[in-house]
Amino acid sequence: MFLCIPIVCGTHDWNKPYDNNPKHAGLFCPHCHNNSVSPIKRREFFTVWFIPLIPLHWGKQLHCNICGWRQDFSNDAQLQQMLQPAQAPLPEKH
Ligand SMILES: [Zn+2]
Image (spheres, rainbow, N blue to C red):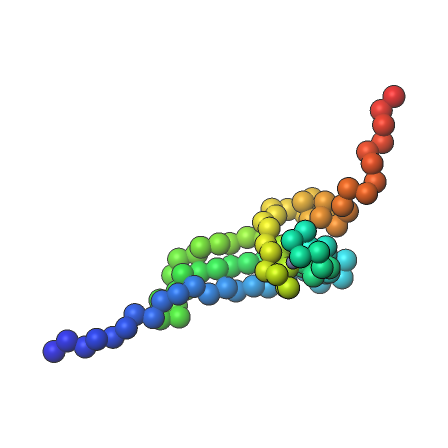
């Protein structure tokens, strides 16, 4: 006897806030121009029967809550660059 059981598969995100630093919330989004970007730890898995099997993405991202813009970043130095957009010019060398 053949039972037709649909295989339920898909992807699922497990997102966590990157940290609790209030300075890291409400960053400027270059896509929709709102201050709605926050850093997250993103883990996305391919799931079968809601069981995570294959990691598709594992890392840190900046994520805009309004338009869904995302950008990977790998360390705190890159995050600091996002916090300080190019306002202060580099000191000139004499
Ligand atoms: Zn946005």
